[in-house]
Amino acid sequence: DAGLTGRKPIVDSYGGWGSYGGGTLSGKDATKVDRSGAYAARWIAKSLVAAGYCHRCCVQLSYAIGLAQPISVHVDTYGTCTNKNGQKEQSLAKLVETKFDLRPGCIVKELDLRRPIMRKTAAYGHFGREEEEFKWEKVKEI
Image (tube, rainbow, N blue to C red; front, side):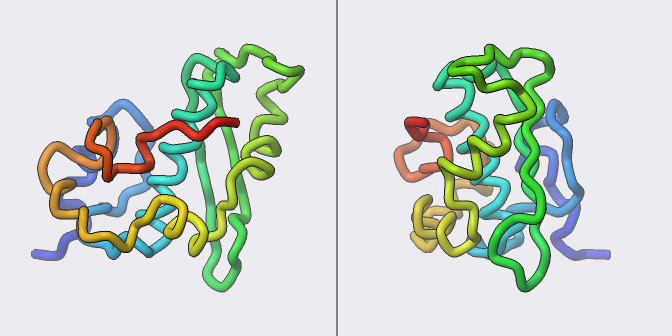
């Protein structure tokens, strides 16, 4: 098999630290939900940590074909939830749903994913970058 799937999925994601769903990001159009959703999950996780809701977290987003909203939003803080503003870990997903518009088109617009910036992701991965054009690495005030 000479397809793109599986070529560099771990480099594209978190180098083996985080959970990984199986598809590669580099071979996909940035407007597709498997890529834009991964960027949104990173953006949300960084924002939750920066706002002091937890010390680390994993954000999972699940989408179904034909539905604009995700069918599931899950936040796992690995026991580091700070209960800021009375927000317990179980309620962080609801907070995320109120602070982030997770419809695929809105993610594409908010993170400006139609720009020709993806060539840079071919080296050194998609996450943990400091370049200005990687908007999913910029914290949103929540």
